[in-house]
Image 1 (cartoon, rainbow, N blue to C red):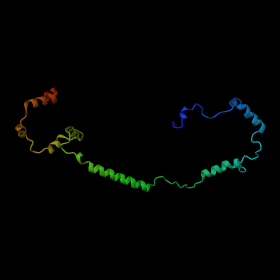
Image 2 (cartoon, rainbow, N blue to C red):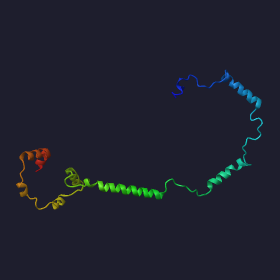
Image 3 (cartoon, rainbow, N blue to C red):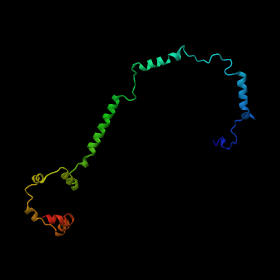
Image 4 (cartoon, rainbow, N blue to C red):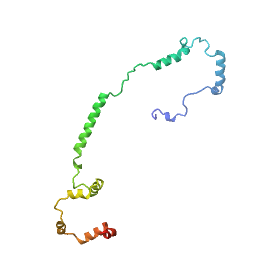
Length: 168
């Protein structure tokens, strides 16, 4: 645009004769009166068949009630869709199987709270838990362990209440 210097032009280049827009309505009505609407044209070029509007409702109802099977061509065939979805499912399965190696749960990465919740939700009785414990848990095994007095006192203060001592 700058090469042809169009950005410096002040006029559009189109001109209308003086007084044209003011007298346009008068000229239009004058021409319509002289020639008349479609003067000289006997036929508009469109023809309606005989008794078309009288029989239109019947023909329309007949077309609606016909049981013609219309063949629908789908954009995506089901066969291609099955192939594509099978390939996508197998790729997702392969990725999930080979990438899941470091997410295998072990006892090291299980949280204690998760195990506690499992035991509470499963409604184990004391007898069930007692059968799971081995014979190695005896009073002597606990007596031999070295418990630090400060830790034991802190545990009792945090987890025990006065009502527990009064019941015993």
